[in-house]
Image (cartoon, rainbow over all chains, first blue to last red; front, side, top):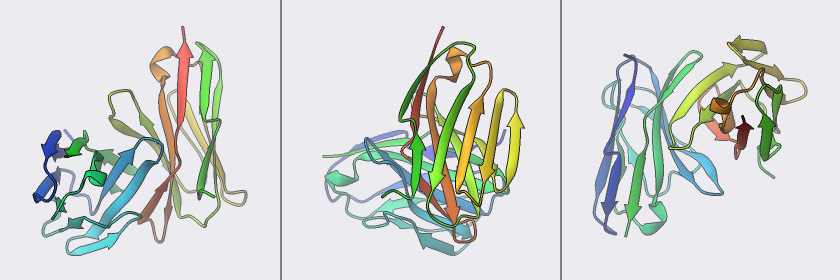
Length: 110
Length: 109
């Protein structure tokens, strides 16, 4: 089954404690991306990757890092999380006209 | 001004009605995406199009590149169509994605 898998689904953490949200796809897609969704602001792109070792900033990259060492994985790294990074995060992959989204990760930073 | 505008913001319809959701954008794009998000949060890609029209079941999406406008039509609407519908545009060689705020559709039985 074609899917994008994010982990964890829910995470509560403390300010400053480094965390990684994993994203994996099984469709051999070249394009992967990360988004955050906030009430009143909608979805906003954080980072995207056109292929292995190729990443670029979206609209809200501050405070986040990504890496694309292999095609299937695209982890989102928060080196020093802050409360303003509390949000719902989605990973997605795309090929041609088909896009697939992960289930979402609800992150709370206290 | 947002680069992607959707209208109306909220929409209520009666089951069986024909529904149109609009999306206008102000930048040059390479493609446009229609997404559906149900309560509970999961996002489903409905269409990605760069010209003309696409149809899938009861859903039809159209785009007019010259007018910078796209519409999503739902025929014979059903309560299970109740969801948030989000328009998003790709700029810069299909890479950067900018979203509209989404429209909340409620279809009453």
